[in-house]
Length: 497
Image (cartoon, rainbow, N blue to C red; front, side, top):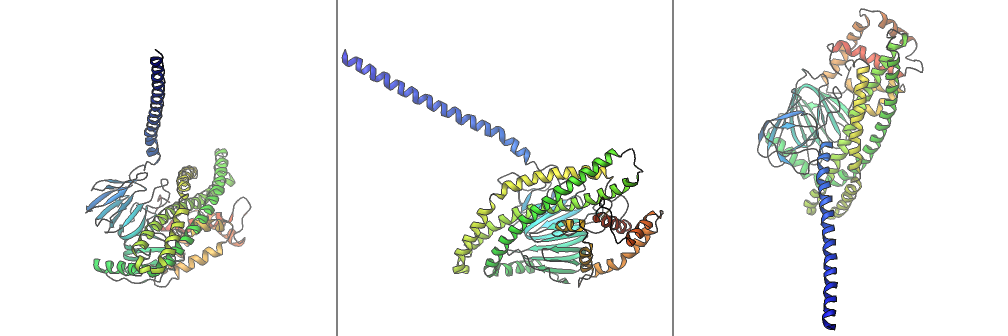
């Protein structure tokens, strides 16, 4: 009996231990399934936050394998004719294919094999021209002016190209060097160090973060010629790689500083716009008041500067994100070129690794910045509606310099702006820009002799006072007023910003 009682006690202890283990296992499984369900429920919300919005274009033709990476997705999918295109899509033909895309019903882009292109997100209706970011490869762009007064903007890491009713061919090599050919129409190239206007049948070549070369006569290049240009750039990559990596590191730091400066200006100007809109709303019954027209003019000027800064901030964010991806791709290139690099391989490998590791925390900041851009764009749209719309622009500002210098213009440094405008018209090799500068004074005289003499009297008063205004209206107000007088005769009425 004693032995049986001992066995029964042992069996009871074993059963209690097994039941406790089973209970713990069941509890763990319940926790696991709860976490899995929560993750499954939260994933659609994340996808909604990354929703691309309305289509910005569609695929016209596809030859071979063409892939696209959607915003918020982790895997690429194949493109087919008729597929829609959204802001933030990255189209890649590195598998050997080619594709023809149509954007905004006015621009057709043909992407050659071995290329990568990102479609820029739209900020708000009427805010900025349609634009794409060419990471590398070759692109043929055909755009027409009808329905697009702002033209079309092509961006690269260090160069922006603005064109209207033109046909361009652009190549970005492995070392981020650029070759731009204007077949028809004209285009303006604006780099980190200088800018130039290109007329029909002209071309230019730009190295990464180097000065834009002068325009030269266009050379008719075949597919083999473009392949030879790309191959020559790739052969020189081992010798240029140390300098290229150092430039990328410096460029990322400068871009971060520029982003902070632009955001500060956006916040400051948003408060000023909000105050103006509030004052206009309070004086809605007194539309003919003396200061009402001046307030409306100042609001339009601030809205224009705000639009330039918003587009510039979007470009800086895209440039930062893609440059970090380019650094990772360059690291893989350095591993493949280990023999060619020799002793320089290991220092470059470590340099690139540190650069990539330091850029990882930027992902959250860039995501927050996209939300900030969306909110500021809606505020800008409301301000433009309160101002009754924007008049047509006199000329498009530079992609990389104008927004950062907008605050300087507001402080009254108009002499620097005139010097820059003169440098564009005096650029060697740009016949079209010189012709435009010689014709420009005539429309201003027509604007002064308009139906009302009020504009001419105000202009004479401004000349006599040296362009100075009261503290309520800044010097940028006078700049905006003069710019609208110059641009109205050159554009049809009712055209967008």
